[in-house]
Length: 329
Image (cartoon, helix red, strand yellow):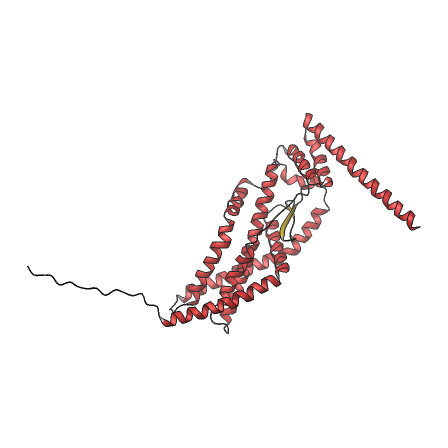
């Protein structure tokens, strides 16, 4: 028997080009510097940035809803606070992950090469605006879901069922979408478009890249124009609704709420627990003509009791004011 010759196969070694390693090292250095600058800028401008996010969220949510749905949406004491026209009912929440969502894609974009080119700055500006609108829509979605869910617990329907289900679904996955998916997609898109880690530039399908960049720029600019342009319109609408009686604010929701009286009674109890006696009095007063039997008696009794408390408080303040004026004389 003849022995077969053993063939030795040389192990294949995964080799990385020195140019790629050098490019990666420089990129990591630029990313560290860019991240530090962006982080400091966000920290320094945090207050106006949070205000702009809250204002943009208010404008978009107000445009997509009834004029009698949302009154205010602001950033106060480290949290986003919203107020409805019904009551008014107040609520708030915190989204600490928004700064990471806003900062990391921007730091990555400005860490890429080509700082002396117009394309570099346009790309960075688009990433800044896209990150801003991701934060805006996140705050708007959470506000919409929280506000609608709170009124549903009080047996008052403010939005169609499909909208509530959609906002509730997005809110459930919001952390994953904003903290994980958006930064990941931003990095992938920017890395592909910029050819950051290739020693020689790749031939892009230029028409597709230009079309994508143009579409993204147009969409972002249009969103910015809508956000800024609607600000004066929303402010004027808030002033108009503020001067209208409470009954007018209830009219758009009466078709969706056949038993609105019970809902208003529950709203009065909720506002009373929040120590908003004026809001609770409005809710009870609107609930009384919409109820019958024992629920109507209970709502009337609560209305009269709160009215007496408000009246006594006003009399006490008047007595204190008169005593101060007498002492000053």
